[in-house]
Length: 79
Image (cartoon, rainbow, N blue to C red):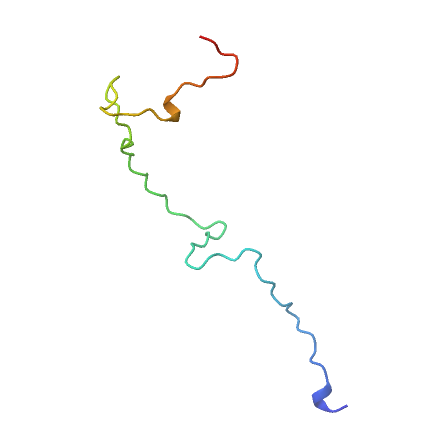
């Protein structure tokens, strides 16, 4: 048999299979097991929601109630 026709011996290292879910480019890689992770700083307190326009029991002038402000009336409810 000519030398070109001989098959190469099998490699002792199997080929590496691709990861099922590779990390997205730029995504942080989770630390290795047993590695120390620095503690995260606590999140700053949240400011009140800016959409809360009700002051006391008064509605703002020109306010129109939305679906969430209206009572739920079911079939069979009577006055």
